[in-house]
Length: 464
Image 1: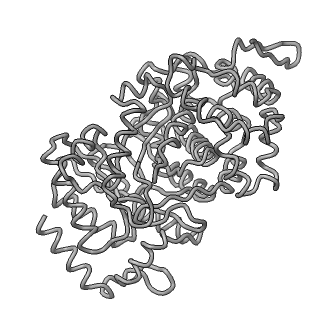
Image 2: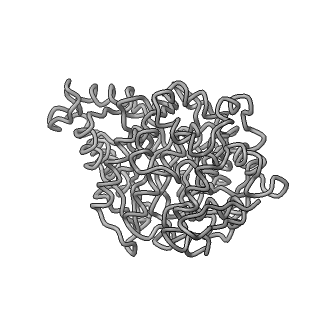
Image 3: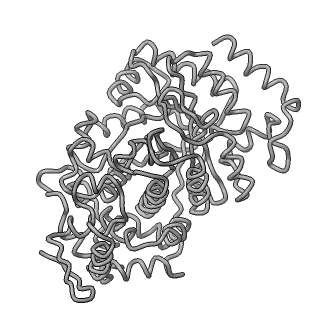
């Protein structure tokens, strides 16, 4: 079915829903690379007007990728809460935007509505929103998850402690863990991206992380971000695995390029649950995503990258994860060219994830060949904190020396906590206080107050 809108004396026509959504997207290099983005700002505005008049039911009734050939589409359709959707089914996309911005769309209402929303609806309405709209609505969405601590509570910000090392050197990793813990980072997860896929090396990393958490009774969780098949095998071999990780995307073909499908993810979740390692909850999965992943695998089916990113959150939602992370600028400038595009994508991703009921965090990051810098990441961090982001990355010096990209540091989390009055996950905050790393006012204090912990952690570093 074609869609159209007239501006002045010219009528702009859009052949189908895929074309309409792509043309209505804010400018990004990935859609230009795919040849599906708007050719001019006027064409983009015409697409936005046409999209605003589109009934939400049209998006639900007309899958962008056929149900019969894509298991992600099948998942989205089969899990759709039609009864809940009836509450908003009379809206157009423009009406839905206006309602989301109203006081009627409060935290409880949005939480109840989340299962009734398909990713395409979240993506469509985001295309009509200014940055401030994305911030306002996302801030009203609350997604709470638990494993060894509680994440997503209001007034809280968690940090993934990311102690990567280019050779998986145990002493280097231990030093980064020590550094992060002393800065109060690590309540989201202590997660290592390994350089090696050797099972011997991976087992050593899992044991090391488990030793730190158990020895010092840290109320957090660990993860080694290797392929899900290796993690299933390691669980069978008795490895002390907390969270199971996998990169995911919004189409069956893109997930196949990662070597995964829904059945494999279900197997992995069942394996992790069988270990019963959580103390306050059983959210055992950790997913990472990024705009452009489907296009880079030639698996985008002509759909714009932001809509496909929202579909990835539809996958994540199925598995009740503890954490989902949009690694927003990591794939490169071919997909998000500069700081402006990265900032916009980060806000879109956070909005869509939270609206769909996904515990979304953001790696505010860029590669060294992108037209972006650390000031752009400061801006993205700040607007995400205003939007109520669940967690961010904590990397020594904001420079990942293994993955070779620029992200955010332990100090960046301190900036956000000070500026917005944000606290750690409550169980982790209690641990920091007991270890005398935080004073009664919740501020980091002189390390001399926690000499015993510092010495013990330092000994562990030397022994690694």
